[in-house]
Length: 100
Length: 394
Image (cartoon, rainbow over all chains, first blue to last red; front, side):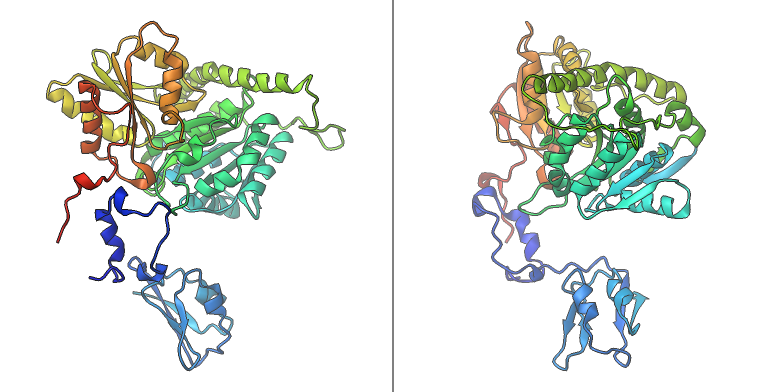
């Protein structure tokens, strides 16, 4: 697996003090670490009700709402922890939280 | 006395509820959040009649508690790591204003690099702020010590703020059976605070205002004396708590199998539980080792450390933090307490378990062995990943 792969963070178990830079500077973006394995509830977006207001995108405390080429919000399952803030904030009630 | 299954965080919440706090002001931070969430539920449901003040930062949270305490309210807050660091200025205000605020702190590493895991740097870095500090080993101890902390903080001979700490996740998010005293029992142990506070509405007084050099030092000395007295008062309070609940956690420095020990390790927080099992394992193999749990870091148990050292030739001190001085903070205190003594045991400092690294039986056993052999550096970081020790996979 490349150092940018989904288990890149596991490689740190084999890094010694001598292998680390003097300052804690990460050289890959944080989204290489996928953090959603403990989700219980999944947001499901009903596009027929969606008004593309992007409140879900704005309120998501992670980077779990993406916008597709047509401008629709999509849930990025590698990052969504199922907190439900998007569903709570969605004005047209277009998002349901569904137990996985 | 009902037995409940509680996380360390909920043990804090139930203690504050049983103490019938008047005012809670807090700001959420991982891994502390569940403490105040639960208290918010208690207030919302009417189970606890208290003012829950929502604030924009930890700095404001503690200020709200200090002001309410000056009016005579019993106050509680909780935080962790960066939140505690943001409170630093107000920590001094709390002790200087002699506000008996009680605070739960979940010990979490300080960034950067970012971490949410156990490390004592956050609270150890506040050792000079005039707060009483207790480090808990179990969720039962979290609950019991928090109740005792209210009584100690509010005692007229003390009047100092107190923090009760618990290791992140090992206690904060791990559930254990906890005996929870009844409300009647707690009411007897901890009567409602006399609400005739230092400041009363309409009374023309100012708290903590400007002082010239002819008086400032005396106020600092008063805090020093109060901290000294708190050590004595704590014994009375723990005896009272024992009479009421049958539980006694052994004072500020409880010891384990130290009577004939050749070497004793001093630990803080959850590492103590692992170290106790290592003591038992080493004893079955003929190594005479013992353990001392540094439960109170402020007031520092100088007398108890001296009593322990009088009969032991080798003492190791485990610091789960490093403060970039001559040695770790707990070690430095132990060394300072023992320097004037005629019998001075050999001392070793172990700095380990930072940022949530597990302090495994193997690592702790290595500390005891280094102590018994007397080898290795005076300040040792035994679980550091050094290149020579690495086994590469693939």
